[in-house]
Length: 272
View 1: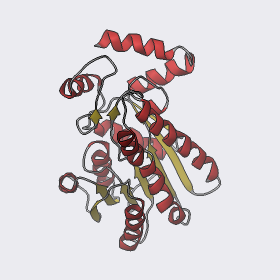
View 2: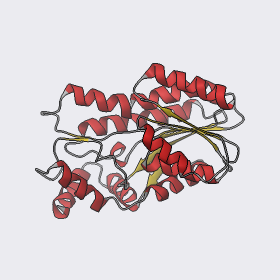
View 3: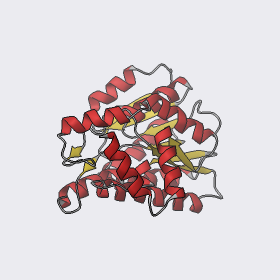
View 4: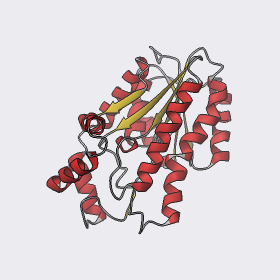
């Protein structure tokens, strides 16, 4: 998809971070937008920041609610007459060990980070298959490529998004639907602020300390992340890595598939 002008883009998690930056850049390029988030105030702020003249709708949506997502897809198609791009971007963070982690927290994260992607994809895919060209972009993570301690739940969801997306891509390869999987590294968003951070990869830390540590490591802005994603869509890239940290970790995992955990463990200790 070379141009986004007059396309209808559906973006979840658009109340802040990468979702907001995607909305801003797509609006500037002439797209119409169907934005959703659980944070309606954030959506209103996103809408107020847009510079384009295309139609924009905002909807409070919990992506973990299948019925709500299916209704949202019908509402979007009824309102705009079409849906051309779907960014399954909404996500949350969780840090717990397997031993100490609760089923409640695990289900909360999986329902948003994995099932939200599935619900969005299945809700919009039948319509998108009828479009002259369409794109489904699912946001995984560098933690969908590597695994680290205290991230088992997050890793499980993001590895699942990656597998789901790569399978879907093969299923629709002979259609006009492009499918891309996004693997961000550290992006300056509120994901840790809003997450359930019970423990840390580098020992005992308070939630405030984890936020501070994340902000030190997160070097890529949401605007840069959105630009990288949209460039990847234009080039039909199957895997979109965001940030030098993501590219570095992906390379280390490829070179040392059995030893990368020890390498990253040492680097985390040095950084703490």
